[in-house]
Amino acid sequence: MLFEFFIPGNAKTTRLIQDLVASSAFPKLTIDTIIASRESSTMEAYSRAIKKWHEWRQRPPSSPASTEEVLNYLTELLDSTSSAATVQAAASALAWFFKLSPSPNPCDSYWIKTFLEGVRRSKPDRYTGRRSEGATVLALVGLLYAACLRPSEGVLLLRTAVSVVPGGLLISVAKDKTNKKGPPRQIPIQGRDEEGCPVRILKDWLQKAPRSRYVFPNFLKNPMTYDSARREWRILISKLGLPDNVTLHGFQESAATDAIKDGAPLDEVMRFGRWKQPKTLEAYIEVSPATTPTASSLSNRLPCPQKKEEVHET
Image (tube, rainbow, N blue to C red; front, side):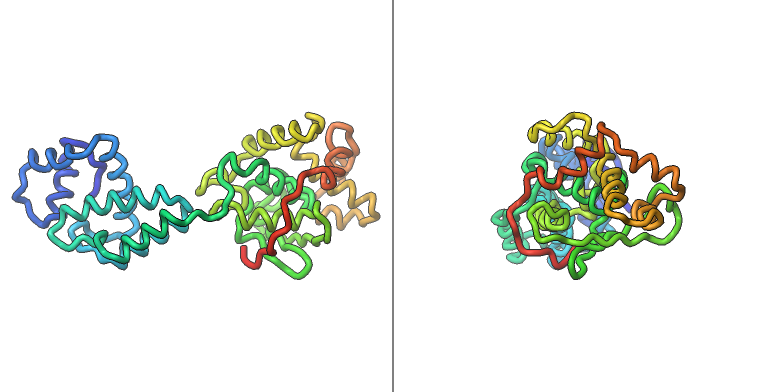
């Protein structure tokens, strides 16, 4: 594919524009001067946006683009990023690029202009960045406790691994510490009719979370890291006035401990937490003042979101 970043003086950039206008009559000085019509920072942003367009389209730059192609591309970009600014920037870059072609500019289409106007006016109610106010880690710790998950399993969870079933949720853990290559393990979570219910909190989070393949995204294309989750957890427990020694790992310990206290057979608890050896489980259910007792009582102390409509898709 003929495409390189728009860097003044770059021979491949010159060739790209020449290919676009289907002519080799323009000398290098002409192309460099055209590139210089925009600030270098603007041209760098344009080059990134146009590079992504060509990677998506997989056709020669000189091949005329249709309105339908551009509209489909911008729609997919909006769906994957939930960012009006990203879509607007991409459209501006493409509009400039297409002006260099003798073919009609698809960005002049009424469909494209109306779509971009809709993007500008749309403000979906979604949590991003600091606006989540602890909602991310609140949903995470509820999940860790209810599904007896390790923190690493929780932060890597995909949306496709969460299914709504009658009475609760079904969590599919594809890989864990004791299951590297086997089939996914299904973990049902029963909902409760109370504000502190982890199922209710997680459903509310799924409605508001940024569009991402991950349940707990750090950025749209990446999952939240363990360090990031731990940092947000420390901020939340500080606001709640909880001890500093309450850790994310304590929620899996609490789930196992509470199951044993409720009379669950040892083999069922081992399957619940996906442990292979009883000795390993014994270490988790060992009641420690540093984690388990406090963590197991948190569901009644954590702030809960207002009740919303239940999630029907994940």
